[in-house]
Length: 535
Image (cartoon, rainbow, N blue to C red; front, side):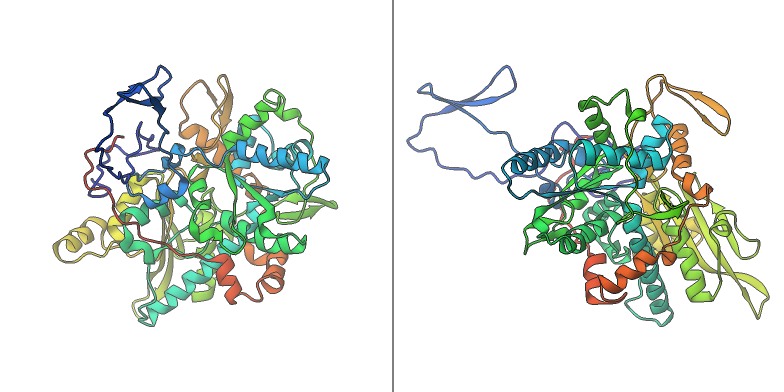
């Protein structure tokens, strides 16, 4: 089936490698050559191009450069790996800032405040590969970036995710109530918004479903708001003098950080200045001589600021979030909606295992699709009826089917879809571009060449290509904190409650909308034909 009128994709299951050539259209301005000598193009041995005139003069031609903003504005690519084409936002940029800080320090000049924000998916990837706990990974990377490289702060995006979960849940309840009141503003199903690959795909190919997408910012971008607005004001620093780096599991987070919606024109700064992937951090460790001694790295105590922590024997410990590595959206929003719409209180365990006659988890066509259903008894018929139906859709193969269900259709096509899908009405869908969700992001670590590991007491050997077994292991590591009971529901976070009051001026304030929500933009199709697209 076609993703769009321009590109046909087949056997779509995982990441699509970028083509050898970018097809972004470029405007060519032809200049009349009256009175000018004819020219030829010569290709040098190193691949450089030279323009040769009849008079023997050679001019080296510059290579065309594609920026992140170019990619966002182009509809030529529709894959979760398109940002691999981009050379911006890498460790070299961070090293340059740290080097500039070192020079400024020697000359007693002002430095940029360097902030590192680590995602729990990246943390889990390190923990999985090097057989460490998540807490140990956090503390070792904190030592590496702060003590060894000279960064000033080290945060955890699980903290900002609490804001994202709460805002998404409140938005869902509002949309549901609007649909019950027949309001035109109540658009369901609501689709999750934290995956930039999914958002980019929607904007470029299915603008009709943008109104279904949750307006809440992702944890990365909410952390950007916290760092550039709150932290900057607390330390008396202008936002452009704070350099914010996030460590993320996928390359598309680089695209997300470059969106114009997340650029402060007053201070000429982005909320997130640089995104580096998990794999790029591993390469940084190797570059600094720590490739073979990562497990022996020193550890710094966890800082509680902008990090999801609790106290155990007077020592800060990391706390996790319920649900899968997709972020726990389906689990938390389901619990929140069950309580606020129907007065039903559910625990995390009850969401995981279900309750006969009340909560049911229904497997889908494959492991990357499943439904979560809340039943309510019909008093007249005395039988359970569906009150809420939530779904999961990971990977573009499944997203393709999801879009077919959500897109507005009429007539024969609508009746055909109702027969095919049973006329199921979803209220919320957790959507991720990567199969198996975020621990399987394109920027995650790969298993070692001779690495062995166990899943449910079964030993698995490597070498191999990264498969579901490795992803499953990393997912199990991700959920380590939940198994240990170290999960704090977002609504119980005193730090989040305090920031709603003292930073945002209330949960429904204008500043809360500005700092925690965003908007989406349909991208006009600039490709006349798909024949030139290479995959």
